[in-house]
Amino acid sequence: MNHQFFYIILILFCGFSPSKLFSEERSELLYRHTIHEYHQLLSQKKQIPEEIWLQLVRDFKHIEKNFPTSPQAPQSLLQIAQIYRILYQTTLNKTHINRSLRTLRQLIEIYPETPLADDSQFMIGKIFEEDKKEMTLALLEYNKVLLYNGDQKTKATQKIRELQKRKLPSYQLLNIPKTAPQFGGRHQGGISIDQSRALPKARILSVRYWATAKWSRIVINSSRPIPFLHGNLPSNVSQTSKEFRHRYFVDMLDSRSTPKIIASLEEKNRLIHEVDIQILNPRITRLAFSSDNPVSVKVFDYEVSGQNFITLEILPEKVAPPFLSPNGMQQQNTDPAFTKGTIKRIIIDPGHGGHDPGASGFGIHEKDIVLAVGRDLKKTIEKNTHLKVFLTRNTDRFLSLEARSAFARQHKGDLFISLHVNAHPAQEARGIESYFLDVTDDQSSIKLAERENSMSDQGLQNFNMILRDLLTLSQSSQSSRLTHAIHARLLTNIRTDFHIDTRNLGVKEAPFLILLGVGMPAALLEISFITNPEENQRLRETKYRESISKGIFQGIQDYILQQNQG
Image (cartoon, helix red, strand yellow):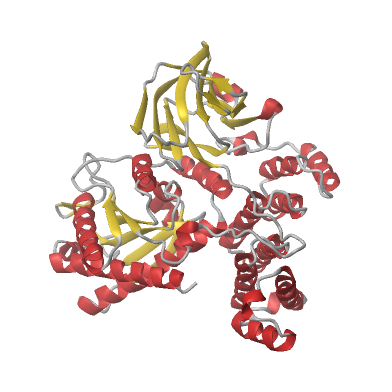
């Protein structure tokens, strides 16, 4: 149902002014109306078209967006997760069940104090047990329910007992972030000690970190996968006698280290301080850092190009939005990146570079094509708008994926566009396709992600599991809108300026590492096939590349207009 029409009914019937509609009573009335529609559909769910369910998802999202501090906000997220689960059970489209999981994790992250948090955690366990048939992960998720003192604790305990009677494969836990607290407030990650002892002793090769006032990243490079622990340390007085109230550590087990710590950005007012390494004993190396205020730390490990990394993403700790107080006062929970008029900085990332040529065909390389398009896109945007544009690279040089996304953070970007050229063993493959970050089971998307991430098949599987824990619904939704807006304009432009038969390969989801770390709406564009003779020839032409740049620019404009209109 159109909510603008529904608001008009509320105004006429109840005599409320529009300025007073955003209150607990209005959100409750709107929620009751939407949940009534949900129960009507539920009675005949197998006969309901998918689009009807998706419209109901949009209705619940509308409530959560406009009443973020009301009790109906977490309730709406739970309903969204249930609808996506119904869609999976009726269509067997795995994208729906992954979105259900991500919505539940978003509910837990944003509203940890709500009574629905343990219900959401229990539902995550049920999804892994009943829908995904991943019993080891289900056991892990049911164990997290025990951290709450809610009404799901008894049911979770029973599920744990049932699953513990089975012989569950341990390999499923390899490289999965274990977010349930261990003893002493520590968390476990990486491979197990037993797995590690069967391998040659690991070496810590390097540690790099990027630090700004509102974000930091630490990347640890090891010679192989390792077990590690991470968590909070007691407050510490540093050698400079300045006291920092908060201290965090990562203990790298079964490894030895003599790396130098390299900081690529030193801001006086940075989020973290005193990043250092200590060798606690011959088998344990500790990395620690301090902060003035509480921080949120997400830790994940992955493999790229045969190298192993542990990454810490560090942000100021977010306070969960409060519910409405009895007097109706509420605290707004609007992300500044998505408010009107705040999209001011665009990050353009020409892929590959230097010793990494990317895809090649008929004597030209991907790295050169995307750099030319990136430079032209920067000129086009700056000529026609007041937006600031930054290129991750403006010359033929190599940048790691971590350095590219760190560049976007350091330059306080609002949108991130990663430029690439496609390739395929079959020369007849052609067309335009665009991607945003999400878990996927589409094999062509997986193969492309393996190539762009420089990951093995096993490495990508592990990264997919990490992505399930880290990706939020809002990140995916905004990136999806941006990618669809750009893709539509890009395709229209090329068809108008060059060839009407340009193939539309669509907007797809894929687990690209480059898009995970940027912290803003992001799109990855595959602008034609360098291995197709006809498209290869077009890519050499300045006018064709300018047409691509113009299409991307117009798509960005469309997205910003959508955001400004709310």
